[in-house]
Image 1 (cartoon, helix red, strand yellow):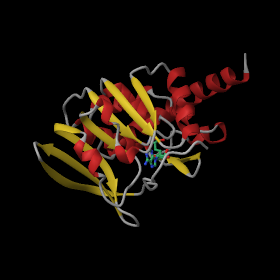
Image 2 (cartoon, rainbow, N blue to C red):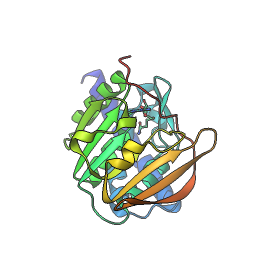
Image 3 (cartoon, rainbow, N blue to C red):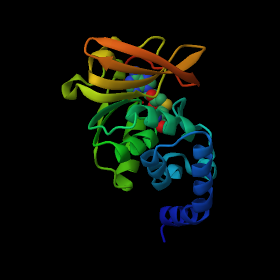
Image 4 (tube, rainbow, N blue to C red):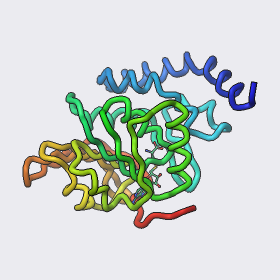
Length: 223
Ligand code: SAH
């Protein structure tokens, strides 16, 4: 067996129980959406981190993915996805901050189509590869500064941002469909997860809970 296959098979056997434990923990922490829980059960998080960290992939913690970025804690991924769905179903969803692609994979399993924007090219390329390997096909990727969204395919039924701006970018509000939901961490030293809902030209803002995300930066880079 090739090294990669051995590695995957080994992890596959040892991780089943730890994965189930993570699911129980998410439920205890208040995650109730069955689509979200099922998506998390079926997504091998260890494939989204470096091999050296894979033994920690089913702990409820954030993990480094290089380039000074982190893969979000499973609880946060579940919570943000649950907030985005709001009990309904979604067709077009934009994600800003592909990172490892783990949140992208979860989203792709609970909505129809994902449009994912990332500013760091090597991260995007790795995420693309992993998602292809696990057969996630309803995602398209864009290498760009997500502060400007992805107007070409908008408006979106929902937008999920996984890096924190000081203030909500106007362009993202503008690309939200009527009734659409935006889930975004906002703030600098102190950050809060916000749920924004569009009603025509009006927006309602709900502060959900304190969070810690890497900053939403400006400009796209190649390395
Ligand atoms: N959801 C990711 C979290 C990655 S951390 C995961 O589960 O792995 C946040 C990501 O947002 C990083 O990859 C970072 O490069 C990206 N990011 C930060 N500012 C951005 C911007 N303006 N446009 C697009 N992506 C951005």
